[in-house]
Amino acid sequence: MRADYNNLRADYNNLRADYNNLRADYNNLRADYNNLRADYNNLRADYDRLLQNASPLLELSQNTTFKIYRKAYQKSLPLLRAIRRWVKK
Image 1 (cartoon, rainbow, N blue to C red):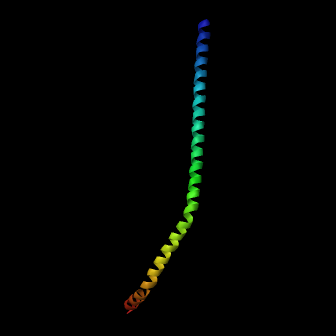
Image 2: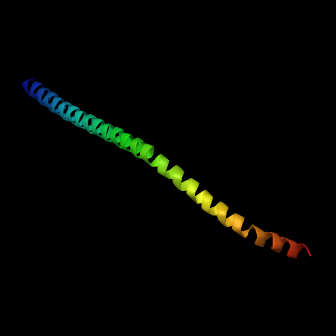
Image 3: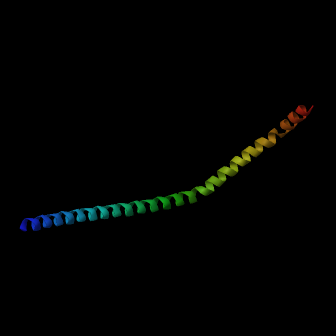
């Protein structure tokens, strides 16, 4: 009877230790998750700030590229018209 009690007590202590270890692991995972979430929020804020700063430059770049292509098209328009007339004949 005494041996059974000691075995049950040992099993209980082992289960309690396992539970405490699992709880510690859970708390560590939760802390890691919170750190990752904070890092994500910081990265998101940095991305938004960079995008906000880059938007005028991007718009200027697109506008400049459009102007360059439009100018090239306008300069080549007489040549394109001549080719169209020549192809129609």
